[in-house]
Amino acid sequence: MDGLYWPSVEHFYHAAKFPGRELAEKIRLAKYAIYAKRLGNRTPRPDWKEIREDVMTRGLRAKFAAHEDIRLKLIDTGSVVLLHRSIKDVYWGVGLDGNGLNRMGVLLMELRTKLLSGSSSPLYSDFGAKSGPKPAL
Image 1 (tube, rainbow, N blue to C red):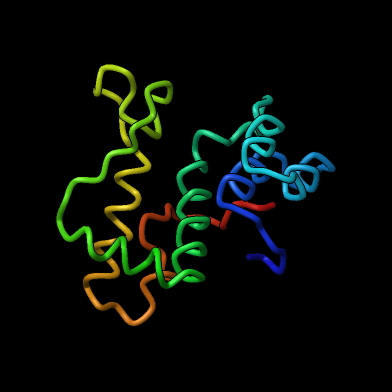
Image 2: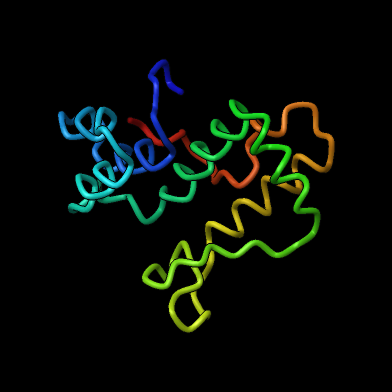
């Protein structure tokens, strides 16, 4: 994506917090996703809360475009509600009490809807993207 190899969406997501900085490349080259996450757990760019879902959406589209096996598994979930069962993360997951925002589940369901609709290029469309330029890395 963007002319670079990204080992995981986790790497891409956390590196996007630090565009043009050496730290972004260090995150991209981290051996494991957990290392990328640890490196990325610092104060991000000032607009991070506004763009983080766009960044995640781009990463997910690239992942599902590159890997037919998981793309088919996502399609096979049909209309099931997808929950990200993170007990610690109430933004991306459902949290300990199940009342989290589940934004990861929502983004995956939006992607699944695009795939099921038969759109000619669902993985590269602007679904879920807010207006404005794509997040810089």
